[in-house]
Amino acid sequence: MQYILFFLLAVGLSAILTPLVKRIAQNKGILDIPSSSRKIHNKPIPLLGGLAIFLSFLISVIIYIALQKPDFNIVPLKFFLAIIIGGGILIIGGALDDKFNLPPKFSWLFPALASLIIVASGIGVGIKFISNPFGAPINIGHSLEIIHWKLEISAIVMWIWIMGMIYTTKFLDGLDGLASGIALIGGATLFALSLTSKINQPITASLAIIFCGSLLGYLFYAFHPASIFLGEGGSTFVGFILGALAIILGAKIATALLVMGIPILDVVWVITRRLWYKNSPFKADRQHLHFRLLDVGFNQRQAVLILYGISAVFGFTAVFLQSMGKLVALVILFCVMLFLAISVVMLYKRKYPHISDK
Image 1 (cartoon, rainbow, N blue to C red):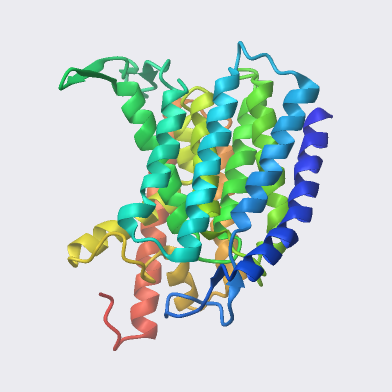
Image 2 (cartoon, rainbow, N blue to C red; image 1 turned 135 degrees about the horizontal axis):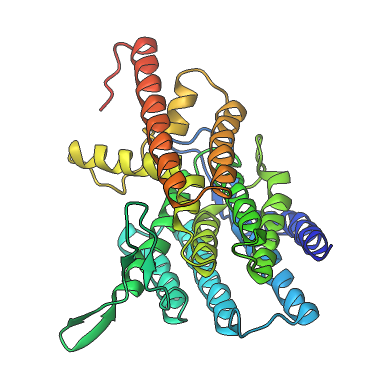
């Protein structure tokens, strides 16, 4: 019952806050103006949607702590603070980016700092091993000494993991409700995993379900046709929370990978492709899978629902799989991505035979 109540609280707060944030974005001129071919909307749309998600998440977590008084011996208070402070940094940095269009050499600092706060709080540093389906667990409990500084390998791994999740959802944010919807599926998967007898973590389950409620309340306004967008802060915040929750659950990285597998593989493919053609890996284009689905004839809702479906199937399957099963699922997921990529490229070439795919 408590999960339902906190879920509904977060949904209600997000549904109320989103129109208010939308009005603030309009008044401050923080809008996504369709000024390039990559933009598929035909009128200015307010940004800052992530602020509504963050505020509803923040308020709900504070109420949860006040009412439920969670055991901080299980999940220390500093972990809660790290998530809130790190998320706040992403929202502030994202708002500045949305308003002033910061160059990449500055905008990456906010995700880097937010990820560093998570690591500095101790989340994940106690994790010494990562499951290995082929044999003994992989030991990441060693230290590296660099110029008289000792760095825990586990801390480095977790920092890279959080950054990877942040940039996955950032690059995924291309269609109405896509990034927030897949993040919702990811949160629901981690919630279900928290309730299994093997994990049994009511605190992380509560955080995950609050996160889901915050996303759902926002999605009422963000699903096509969207009246508000996540913005830079929102697109990075949702990946940040997913990455942090996966670590708190005990490095359930494979589970998160299965939910976010298609977006992650898409990001790897697009960045590799940009480097192959000697373009900047940060240069925006229409080569992402979700844009390709539009190019070959799907509408926004259809493309988004296809990607929702894939993420949901692999995500919820992962809840019931052991290490080897997850590896098999990851291989299948890779094959699905390969099939999708080849199919949409062939359909694109057939539909637009005279347009270069560069």
